[in-house]
Figure 1 (cartoon, rainbow, N blue to C red):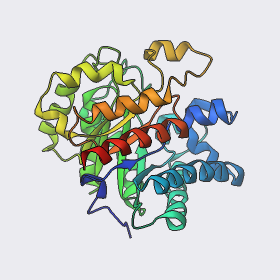
Figure 2 (figure 1 turned 90 degrees about the vertical axis):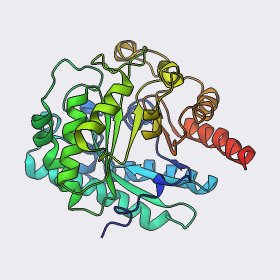
Figure 3 (figure 1 turned 180 degrees about the vertical axis):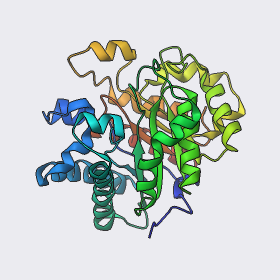
Figure 4 (figure 1 turned 30 degrees about the vertical axis):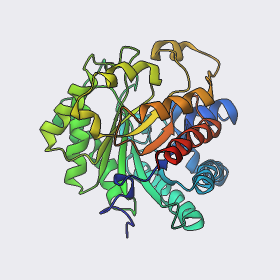
Length: 319
């Protein structure tokens, strides 16, 4: 039975962390060959399972040290039909991989959860195409049907929710929310933006959130921003608007580079962890409901520790 599906604790005011950039950590720090950035492919054997177990357990220990909750995102960002097919997965083996990913996180929760550190388990969905490009776009209905199998698989596990990360156009987001509603799963939608604060599709962030809410009766539990540096979207947030209250999660990149520059880079840009932590703290004044803090490309445990440090100090001075 799911533990938090009907009462997500991050919807209160307590702070939660999540992990950093899983794929960039595995590739650049662990030296692991990760075709198509498909971390779920590591679940195929015991060694890969153990690697992922160690990775996620490290972040739960950080959450416990700081007294925060944590949202554990399954390593399933690429575990959808198109990307799975590139690695030889069919519908049956792909569903097995998604279930095994949730089982991994359930093991970690059983071992590390405390009253002070609730562990929320999220099935992670990624875009059908490239997270940085909106060149090939689905209609809302096609997106709903495309993501339905992975959504239904997660619904049949003890996952508490699903999160869709690095979405770059609105129709796919709406389709995912509709699929989540069909499966009775809480869902968080995370958009990525370019250096101008707009989605790769050209849509404004505010419009993307408002349209998704309008066409789904605001079913999404909350929204997030991921795979962009705070300097890319801070100005957009400063423009104000009630839509900002729908944003509860932030998973920023370590680098200030654009998506195109990151695609061409052969070395990891880890940025400045302390500066990133301070930027997260400053963004809390612009995002009044921000409760879920983690990282994306180029970030690792050092960045999440710095975010904890800065935001813990913010909480202490606010009391």
